[in-house]
Amino acid sequence: MAPPHARRRVEGVRLDRVDWRSLGAEVAAWDALARDASEPNPFFESWYLLPSLEHLARDLPVSVLRFEQGERLAGLLPIVRMPRYYRWPIPNIASWVHANAFCGAPLVARGSEEAFWQAVLPWADAHAGTALFLHLRALPLDGPLYGALAGTAAREGRELAVVHREARAMLTSDLSPEAYLESSLSGKKRKELRRQTKRLAEEGELTVERERGEAGLGAWLDAFLALEAAGWKGKAGSALSCARETESLFRDSLSGAARGDRLERLTIRSAGRPIAMLATFLTPPGAFSFKTAFDESFARFSPGVLLQRENLAVLENPDIAWSDSCAAEDHPMIDHFWRERREIGRVSVAIGGALRRTAFHHLARRETARPRQKGK
View: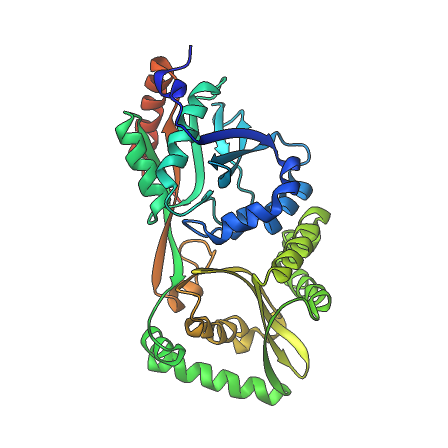
């Protein structure tokens, strides 16, 4: 028998678990939801999530929780039933976030945050199966979605545990790019950057390109993939082009982002040759620095740092209030450049009846009592 919360229905609200392939017919409503989202997340927008599912989840039991208010699509979250919880054989229902998706915030219409969780948690109660808990990955901990989740869980007497958290670099400031650079880096470091730029210019004409839209995108994608594959990622087998699935995801998702004016491409060239490249997703009021690559034969000129210096121009975009680095915590370059931080966490929530919740309580206590770790 489902617990009381699972039997509660709210008039005008509906939550269904649907096959992700059916969402292709709802792209217009999906895109409207993304524009009105409480928290932006490019990785769950149609142009990124559909290629992700198409190329990476064909053999996985991924489905999508689809939340409606009235006749409006008001929430969307991809989920997967996992037989393991990292290294432990503990079944759970998890948000689906792959290695090239850096945010797991569900797309939820602004103002509908509590209603969304008030629908999702009872659904998880009623459809728990063998799952011990609901596990939400890469969830921002400083926004309205987590606040609404924590508040809903508290009111319903559910245990909630932040089992892992990290603070990754972000950029948000009222300063101009020049003023931010001055406040962020020491005078000695800024002098070194000027020296490196001058020396790099001696190698050949130095140009900076900032592009949006689809013009020239195909050639840019080819150049980026080649540049990344020529470096350490290619040698390690982790470059996007090392697997057909990730290369296809990169090409398809950036093409979709460009069509929707969600993509900015930044390139530094030396004598016409690309030596540093950055793809940024623009999702007002935020931006996400998705992928970067640089020519390691120019490493003595710090092309990655020079690229990020140029990227400070995002501070002048009136539509963008902050930019997420999408970088790991304690990144050796960006953490010294971008001074602000964004807390991202993995959050587990109790579901089901009393016995299941008791078992979850003991697991959560064990998880949160351990020393903080970088990963599992």
